Image (cartoon, rainbow, N blue to C red; front, side, top):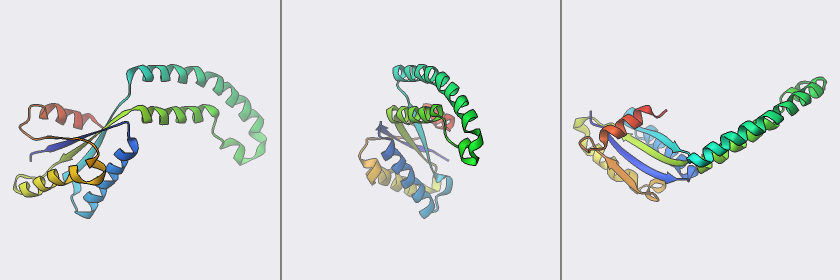
Length: 161
């Protein structure tokens, strides 16, 4: 089976990329495509901001952890609810994760995996996907089996989780 890849660069627009994922998942279910249409995300964080965020997380986590232990000792007799509160360190880390995700560049890679006798279906999906709503706002790169960058894209797709 020959794979074809569609690569969309959404930049820092995570919300539109998630909308694209939902669209692909609805197509898979609605048209009973199964594994013929697969989508994966590639996120690239900026190097400078990533290193600074790690240093800030380490520096802010230590004092917050000390505050958390003191607060948990004090709240121990308050019942079940006292133990279920989030610590400020966890909230800060979650907020940083959201900020890092918002700063990350998002590329969506869609793999079309149609067999050789389904060439017409493959061509129709290659024509349709870039014209649909979440995808038409970004530029599409189509990589087919014989293209020079196909092997690199195939390896990248396999390594993504």
